[in-house]
Length: 602
Image 1 (cartoon, rainbow, N blue to C red):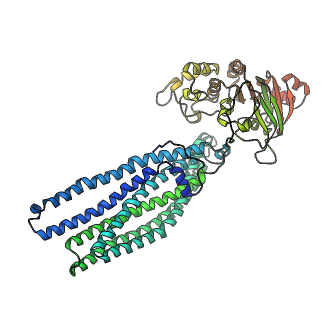
Image 2: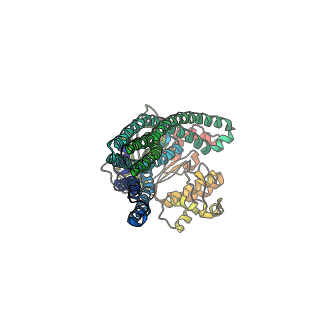
Image 3: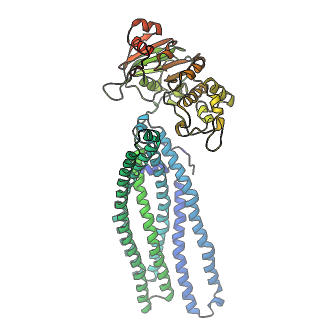
């Protein structure tokens, strides 16, 4: 089994097709596991028959049986000391070693790979913790369904069929008794397990709500404390837990009723078979060994009933969780590469927006009929009121969304026909809300270009004015400097420190197109002034799109465009725009007059 092999196509949204999609490439191992499980079922029943046969032989021979028929005793010992242990070990090996770890890795890898390809709106509309929990829950549940299912299909079914055949060979009425019992057992399972499955789906959905609520609260714990809303969050969690508790009680009540009927039926089998065997023995139709074999086999089947019912319960509970996971994980909220998509080749880094429309599916917002040409190496500043379309423009350039009209091109290559990965490799971006991984400072910087050397990484950090404070970092495990971990979302750093690491990441990536979305907004004036010269060096030879709230940071741009309601209202140099006495001049006047323009750039 190749646990990290890619799946073909999209995951289906129905249970059985979804399982086939996930398990593709693992069926050989699954069938071998079923075969090993069948061998356990057959071996167990044969062992009980062998005991009955030895008893009959001993009764016929008398006290000298151990001496005269030592070979029979050796046969019994070989069976129970060699054949039966090997059969059990093979079954355990297939389930615990071959299937369990590999199926979980295979399932989670395929589900996670598909999830990572979803569009940003998919992640915006759900809790990160809930998506992660559903991925792991679905993978674990599917693994358990397969491993337990192979045991039930093989071991239990083989044991029941073997028992019916062997006891039927003694007397047809004994075989019929096992068959009737099996039909009654199947009826109970068919009646109860779909109900358990439905209640399991509801329980899984409400458990995910609890997980999402707790993760959302912990993720925003600083805000919770700052606004003194601890009790409100506790109340919200209690509400989610109440729903989960009610669904859990409903599920458990059905389970208890099911197990009561199952164990009653389980006790009925040995009672009926032993009474029937004694009745047959009294009429000379069965031997003492037949009675012993019937007792052992029926007791084994009764005991197995408890295990099978428990395993079946687990299977149907897990099926409910898989179906709940399918609803969360399989929607096709994706922006796919075109079938003819090629690798983007950037030679000059000229960018062109040609009559581009994108309003997020609404009648307003975003950009409308926007045309803009950015020359290779040009430094373009972008300003505008909140909602004017600045962030939309950048998101479209990165192909996080596809234009609803018009086209965007780089060096004449339509972005709709290049691969997204190759496009984003050619663009470095620093955003206002910096993204930090809970990894080392080194890992966070090298995320821009993993192949960069330590020397290149340190040089980038120095340009971003980050090197000195990185050397002073120390995490809770004693790791220091570039090896120190930054905490979830970089929580151990100040806003300015996070921003400087993000700048270092963009510098080390060294892409021909650089996007700065409020790149210095988290820096104090002193630090911002210190890295402005470094930023100018980084921008040399690159095509730059810079969104900024502080207009002073754009004053030296080659050109500035002012967006208003999704369209370009003004365009020109800083001096030209001031001379026009339009929107840009209004923003500039308010900021230079000491007021913060709350309607200015995002």
